[in-house]
Image (cartoon, rainbow, N blue to C red; front, side, top):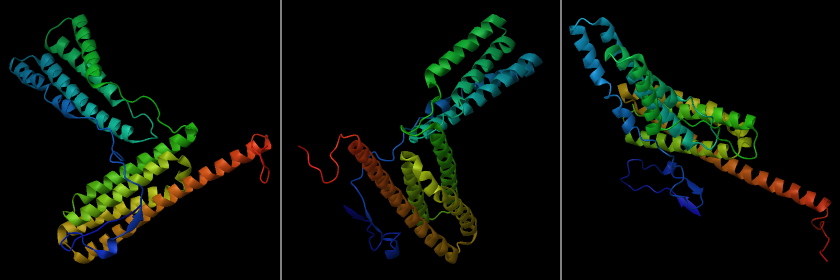
Length: 309
């Protein structure tokens, strides 16, 4: 089924040169959707230790230096714990969105331990609880933290039929490429031009789709490596430089050149994705042919020109 991108006369990105006809299968409305982990509760934890901050100032007025330092230290530990939890949620979302991935650093588990340490310290040195009671407070805090926010992903995600080395190789390459894509997106946000930002979004989406194809079949990595490194890094560097220039001078020549670059890159990534998919069909045809020949040699299938009795 052929799909064409149409633009009206008054469309902000009306450019006949950009109209590309691409043969596509019906689109799955859930395609490209990733499992997002909400940061709302994690962000609330930044406000939970505020009483410790106020308590520290109160201890300062009471001339109790040890209790004051304990309150401030516990406040800092709990803020660090909240930050690690939020970063752990980001890493978990990235892990969930990939088909091939290594387990991220266990930020949530580390955050739970730091949170327990902070609460235990505050209970013992600031609130005057005995040591055993402070330890209980800390352990309960760790358990409640993990019960509320869960564990980090602890298993590798790989494609069946490929060894661990291939899966790790693909996971590392995809992680690096996704960091570059994020840098492109961040730089594009500084441009302040809706049409350019839309084209950058199209480019990053096409690059992401190509990464998903590579994850499906790690054999595609060698063929796609130049796109995942050289081309993406070139797009990132060009976007950063253009954002710096255009935000200051609104240089239309630079804008035109950058827009042309985006159009060429978008076509290249879309073409590479189709080529990788075609290669996957070729791999399948070869595997079917090899299997057929083996079955024929073992007598399970008639050979060419022979008929079944």
